[in-house]
Picture 1 (tube, rainbow, N blue to C red):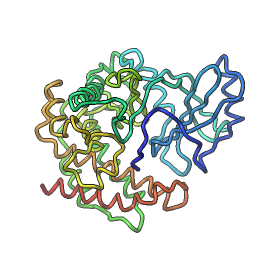
Picture 2 (picture 1 turned 90 degrees about the vertical axis):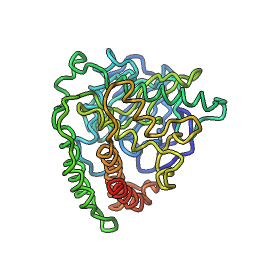
Picture 3 (picture 1 turned 120 degrees about the vertical axis):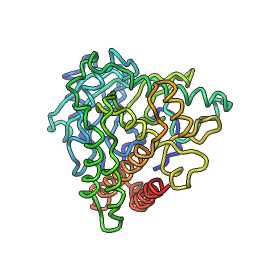
Length: 355
């Protein structure tokens, strides 16, 4: 799952994830003005969920997003949901790519999809690029700029943004716990544990409703932001809004911190996550919690539930992906080791609960 690449470049399309490029090209030329010639086709390989392709036309670069191949819950990979949230956010949270077109006509490429303009900039995955010549102080500034983007999102007035009907923020935590538990049960394979103790603990420790509701990104990581080419501490865009929702912002922070490794973490956590959070100058998880509390006034002193939830959600996501590989719905060899990672992450949740 850990990829040693940086930048914002696409690669050849993975085997088994090809589309009907001629049909897509013909369709796009009828709905997007000015497209001519044949596009160069490539794919962004960083994600494990929705598939992202680059179509390079002479007039400019387009990005196409579609759900993964194989049996998936439609709500978990809704293109229209991702398309709508980005459209609404552009006026109040400008760090969103420019969306162009959505289609639910599965005759084009076999699924719904949407199109956006490719944002200029760079994406960092597993390491700070040496060319940046960052000192620890520079890295700290970069780190704070990253977390400031999440804080900024959590402070957006979603009612004023026209997103009051986007979801039901009350009861979000309970729905998430019950939902992820059900997803695990549906995706379990014979070679992983049941983790009934983790599931039961989460149900029994759901926090009381605080009335504190925000827009939640759901997948906030360094490799999901586009950085300015000249000043990487300037974030030009936040990507991958597929599981955006309304709810308790601490749930979103718990998700984000479950992706954030630090120097004293076990090796399997460091190998799992594709972002440079262990670089000298990066904040630890506790320092991030303190910073979040300082900037928002939200108490983060007792964070165990949200921390366990974040790791448990990652456990279930990995198991859902592994289920597809286990049953031959994807040939992506990266996913062959996910069963073992699921077991380790589930045990990590147990350790956090027992601490």
